Length: 126
Image (cartoon, rainbow, N blue to C red):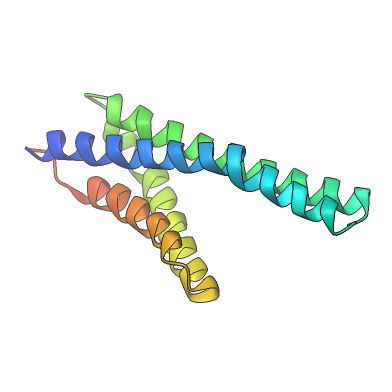
């Protein structure tokens, strides 16, 4: 049961992470770009900000692919345990930080993703 539950948690977390990356790329970044241009931020600054935002989107997608790859593995998933725990920690800590900083309940989704990955990593093989 542990391996099956692990795969389910990793699969769900990976899908949520991929969805968050998609929303970031298609909604958040374009919206922020429009706002920056509307308030006449220097083009070089807009470019630098967008580069950072796009990097974040690529990293989110990469983490989602790592988690989904682990969910798809039947054997050898324990080799990915340490990298997955790092992803879990980063998502959880970022979610808590973002919630404290912004007060937005939406940021708790990152905590949920991180906790799902972390729990999946801590499940024992049966």
